[in-house]
Image (cartoon, rainbow over all chains, first blue to last red; front, top):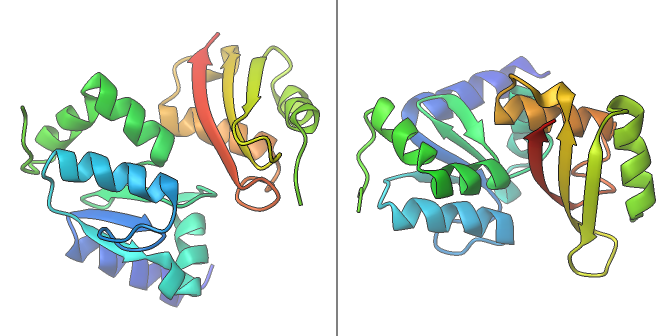
Length: 111
Length: 76
């Protein structure tokens, strides 16, 4: 893959502890799957940055290669790819996302 | 550009012959599906690895011809 894009993605991940590559913005998601993860993060009051892949086609394709994952949204916590919509929803329902946030020292509303 | 339920099942079966697969067409548009797949291939793997196995079986169609496939994977 294009090394510049790879570097750019790494820099984005280093700058943002909780980073959601999504379609649209956290305030105006433009895809139901992106909205679903946004809602989970908002519910848990996690501070996160949304990267709108619709604004940047290189990032949109680059992130799929970076994680070897074919779809958007993608959630990263401290540079670790945690999952797409199905996995994040499932982890949230089982309390595993909350465990992951604790392990990574990310503050969130527990109850 | 749509993929039929049978085509999705066949692709998954090619890579995961033991898989028990149930697929639902969520919107009736052959574009938004939900699939539950049970296979021995998932044993001991993380969810991310399990979903990647399914995506690989779909040979690049996920995110292209196949717009939306909600996945639930289970160890068989």
